[in-house]
Length: 214
Image (cartoon, rainbow, N blue to C red; front, top):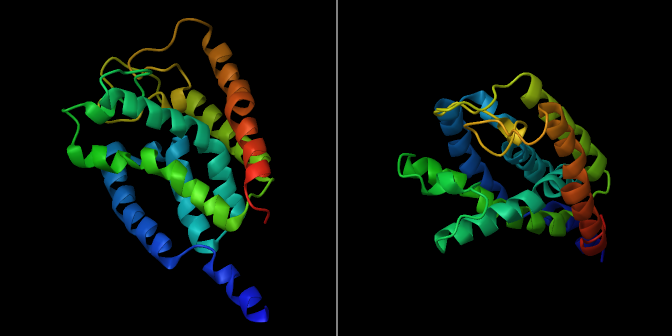
């Protein structure tokens, strides 16, 4: 029993996972920085990539749990939309870029992490346990990112090119034009309220119930 108690913490995340994910990030970070610029790392998903990289090496349940709370719901929709697109039906348009022949196949391959990252996070939460502080920690970080993207980063434009615009959809669902259904600040407030209510909080309760305790 004493041997198991000593060895278990250091073996919570396999070394192969740490090395494999690190190798992927060693390619993605410089490529994304060169092609899109550093502001691309303000996207929720890219922030979570960085947090996950730190989390796998430090075996931080809090960092991994934050990423799970923030990404499991939206990335699940990404997977559904991608599979629907493969079947010939675009549901939301959020994965249309994955089928854009004008975009480098290599960049699209790297962006495929949206499809496997939620499953990796579930595996990591299962190995590390779920840290219930993640809901508040991610909620604060998400709000900060939304405010920065709205007030500092560029909004949609007719020809956005490779420069990230409308980061985290703070101006609507399209990168080419802002939504016109409600005033801009109402849309932003809707994101800041709706994301916690519809995505973060349900995921928190699901993980708190299903994931192993820390």
